[in-house]
Image (cartoon, rainbow, N blue to C red; front, side):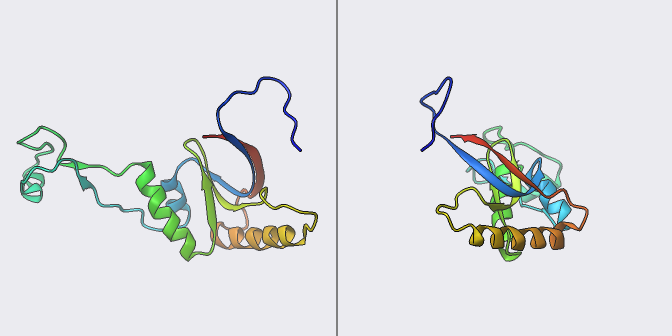
Length: 147
């Protein structure tokens, strides 16, 4: 049973414990893994125009509605692609709006048998070293994530 002391709000939160490597953003994970992070820009509006001709002429805005011709990919586009790339490499990641860890969640295991968790940590540690090198900053991180 968890007992909270001090102020408790009605916002939803959960605790986490992660064995992994911290990154500021998804694009930096691609760079660390030497994976090309190119994501095609999507049309910003639904106007029926020849976007490629306008772009090749140096135009950045839609002549009909004034919005950008293409929306540049943002952090969430990179994180969506990151999910599929890391699953190919047999490693996971956990993230919130403010942080991103490549590794595994070790705080969700229940019960008194810790052997599966220790084995999972050893396997993850080995895999992280293979992916990011022996000098990578692999740590155990813990905290609270608000939803």
